[in-house]
Length: 159
Picture 1: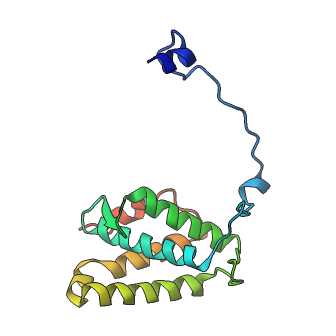
Picture 2 (picture 1 turned 120 degrees about the vertical axis):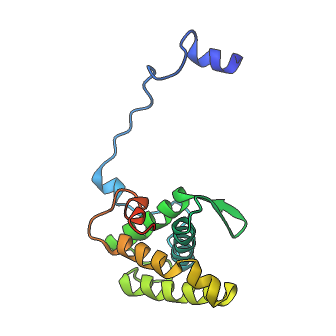
């Protein structure tokens, strides 16, 4: 309580305290430079994989799902598809020199779906709605317009 009182004084919250003022330009928003990092093929693959797995889970009625021993929710899938959309539409090249384009995303999606089907079996794969999840992800990533939130079009796929 002392730590909060030291900052807030008699105020019940910090709504009235203006935060630091940041000036953000369009150039800064489109700068994909990552300090001490880069966009990698592994990162692209992980985004495709995790987004498909989460969307498939969401389409079958689960709002949170364990993927690779992490508890994931719509925010994870949203970050994954948003990064893919940004990288695709801003012609980003991976650290390995591979251009992120529609063909790359489709190829990775094919590979990931095959891996998932082999891991869980054909019946579980079909029941899991993975193909629908893949098509949803691709439509969101390929779309010329950034769709506000991935669950909006996903609701149309729920029975």
